[in-house]
Length: 151
Picture: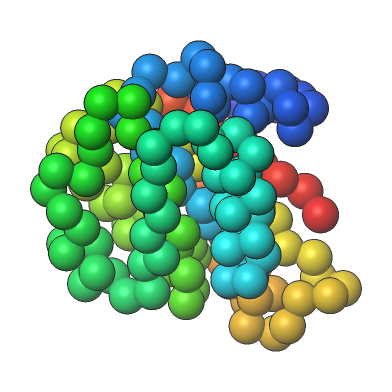
Protein backbone atom coordinates (compact mmCIF):
# COMPACT_ATOMS: atom_id res chain seq x y z
CA UNK A 1 0.00 0.00 0.00
CA UNK A 2 1.34 3.43 -0.91
CA UNK A 3 1.14 6.81 0.68
CA UNK A 4 -1.68 9.22 0.09
CA UNK A 5 -0.68 12.86 0.37
CA UNK A 6 -3.21 15.64 0.44
CA UNK A 7 -2.08 19.11 -0.48
CA UNK A 8 -4.19 22.20 -0.99
CA UNK A 9 -3.15 24.59 -3.69
CA UNK A 10 -4.59 27.72 -5.20
CA UNK A 11 -6.58 27.57 -8.42
CA UNK A 12 -3.96 29.64 -10.24
CA UNK A 13 -1.15 27.34 -9.07
CA UNK A 14 -3.07 24.27 -10.27
CA UNK A 15 -3.77 25.90 -13.64
CA UNK A 16 -0.11 26.91 -13.94
CA UNK A 17 0.94 23.33 -13.22
CA UNK A 18 -1.40 21.96 -15.87
CA UNK A 19 -0.26 24.41 -18.51
CA UNK A 20 3.43 24.89 -17.87
CA UNK A 21 4.70 21.81 -16.08
CA UNK A 22 2.79 19.08 -17.85
CA UNK A 23 4.53 17.71 -20.88
CA UNK A 24 2.23 17.87 -23.91
CA UNK A 25 0.29 16.14 -25.23
CA UNK A 26 -1.91 16.21 -22.12
CA UNK A 27 -5.23 14.51 -21.44
CA UNK A 28 -7.45 16.16 -18.84
CA UNK A 29 -10.38 14.12 -17.53
CA UNK A 30 -13.19 15.81 -15.62
CA UNK A 31 -15.37 13.67 -13.36
CA UNK A 32 -18.17 14.43 -10.92
CA UNK A 33 -21.84 13.96 -10.23
CA UNK A 34 -23.26 17.03 -11.96
CA UNK A 35 -22.90 17.16 -15.75
CA UNK A 36 -23.60 20.90 -15.78
CA UNK A 37 -20.89 21.58 -13.20
CA UNK A 38 -18.38 19.43 -15.10
CA UNK A 39 -19.05 21.32 -18.33
CA UNK A 40 -18.94 24.72 -16.62
CA UNK A 41 -15.62 24.09 -14.88
CA UNK A 42 -14.05 22.42 -17.92
CA UNK A 43 -15.02 25.42 -20.04
CA UNK A 44 -13.69 27.87 -17.44
CA UNK A 45 -10.36 26.06 -17.16
CA UNK A 46 -9.93 25.70 -20.90
CA UNK A 47 -10.71 29.37 -21.49
CA UNK A 48 -8.44 30.63 -18.70
CA UNK A 49 -5.54 28.22 -18.84
CA UNK A 50 -5.57 26.74 -22.31
CA UNK A 51 -6.94 29.63 -24.36
CA UNK A 52 -3.64 30.11 -26.19
CA UNK A 53 -2.98 26.37 -26.57
CA UNK A 54 -4.63 24.05 -29.09
CA UNK A 55 -7.22 21.99 -27.25
CA UNK A 56 -10.27 19.89 -27.99
CA UNK A 57 -13.12 18.89 -25.68
CA UNK A 58 -15.08 15.65 -25.89
CA UNK A 59 -18.22 14.93 -23.87
CA UNK A 60 -18.48 11.18 -23.25
CA UNK A 61 -22.05 10.18 -22.38
CA UNK A 62 -21.84 6.46 -23.20
CA UNK A 63 -18.98 4.02 -22.70
CA UNK A 64 -19.15 3.03 -26.38
CA UNK A 65 -18.11 6.57 -27.36
CA UNK A 66 -14.62 6.04 -25.98
CA UNK A 67 -13.69 3.72 -28.85
CA UNK A 68 -14.81 6.36 -31.36
CA UNK A 69 -12.26 8.93 -30.21
CA UNK A 70 -9.79 9.59 -33.03
CA UNK A 71 -6.56 7.60 -32.88
CA UNK A 72 -4.65 10.77 -33.76
CA UNK A 73 -6.42 12.77 -31.05
CA UNK A 74 -3.19 14.44 -29.96
CA UNK A 75 -0.95 16.78 -31.85
CA UNK A 76 2.25 18.45 -30.67
CA UNK A 77 1.46 20.80 -27.74
CA UNK A 78 -2.13 19.61 -27.77
CA UNK A 79 -4.48 19.31 -24.81
CA UNK A 80 -7.54 17.05 -24.89
CA UNK A 81 -10.35 17.51 -22.37
CA UNK A 82 -12.63 14.55 -21.66
CA UNK A 83 -15.83 15.22 -19.72
CA UNK A 84 -17.28 12.01 -18.28
CA UNK A 85 -21.03 12.61 -18.19
CA UNK A 86 -24.28 10.69 -17.63
CA UNK A 87 -23.01 8.85 -14.58
CA UNK A 88 -19.83 7.45 -16.17
CA UNK A 89 -17.73 9.19 -13.51
CA UNK A 90 -18.95 6.74 -10.89
CA UNK A 91 -17.56 3.69 -12.73
CA UNK A 92 -13.94 3.10 -11.63
CA UNK A 93 -13.22 0.57 -14.41
CA UNK A 94 -14.36 3.03 -17.03
CA UNK A 95 -12.27 5.83 -15.51
CA UNK A 96 -9.17 3.59 -15.76
CA UNK A 97 -10.13 2.64 -19.32
CA UNK A 98 -10.25 6.33 -20.29
CA UNK A 99 -6.76 6.86 -18.83
CA UNK A 100 -5.47 3.80 -20.70
CA UNK A 101 -7.01 4.98 -23.99
CA UNK A 102 -5.48 8.44 -23.66
CA UNK A 103 -2.05 6.90 -22.99
CA UNK A 104 -2.43 4.58 -25.99
CA UNK A 105 -3.30 7.54 -28.18
CA UNK A 106 -0.12 9.37 -27.13
CA UNK A 107 -0.79 11.36 -23.95
CA UNK A 108 2.46 12.06 -22.12
CA UNK A 109 0.58 13.38 -19.07
CA UNK A 110 -2.91 12.55 -17.86
CA UNK A 111 -4.65 14.75 -15.30
CA UNK A 112 -7.93 13.94 -13.58
CA UNK A 113 -10.03 16.62 -11.94
CA UNK A 114 -12.69 15.36 -9.55
CA UNK A 115 -15.39 17.96 -8.97
CA UNK A 116 -17.03 17.01 -5.70
CA UNK A 117 -20.75 17.59 -5.55
CA UNK A 118 -22.73 19.84 -3.32
CA UNK A 119 -25.31 17.75 -1.47
CA UNK A 120 -27.36 20.86 -0.69
CA UNK A 121 -27.81 22.09 -4.26
CA UNK A 122 -27.29 19.10 -6.59
CA UNK A 123 -30.20 17.02 -7.84
CA UNK A 124 -30.77 13.43 -6.67
CA UNK A 125 -29.04 11.84 -9.67
CA UNK A 126 -25.93 14.00 -9.24
CA UNK A 127 -25.88 13.24 -5.50
CA UNK A 128 -26.08 9.48 -6.21
CA UNK A 129 -23.16 9.68 -8.66
CA UNK A 130 -21.18 11.78 -6.21
CA UNK A 131 -21.85 9.23 -3.47
CA UNK A 132 -20.57 6.46 -5.79
CA UNK A 133 -17.42 8.51 -6.31
CA UNK A 134 -16.98 9.01 -2.58
CA UNK A 135 -17.43 5.26 -1.98
CA UNK A 136 -14.94 4.38 -4.72
CA UNK A 137 -12.81 7.52 -5.22
CA UNK A 138 -10.42 7.98 -8.12
CA UNK A 139 -6.88 6.80 -7.55
CA UNK A 140 -3.62 8.04 -9.01
CA UNK A 141 -3.10 4.75 -10.89
CA UNK A 142 -1.99 5.74 -14.38
CA UNK A 143 -2.40 9.45 -13.66
CA UNK A 144 0.26 12.10 -13.38
CA UNK A 145 -1.93 14.45 -11.34
CA UNK A 146 -5.23 14.12 -9.50
CA UNK A 147 -6.96 17.29 -8.37
CA UNK A 148 -10.09 17.46 -6.24
CA UNK A 149 -12.28 20.54 -6.36
CA UNK A 150 -14.47 21.09 -3.31
CA UNK A 151 -17.77 23.00 -3.45
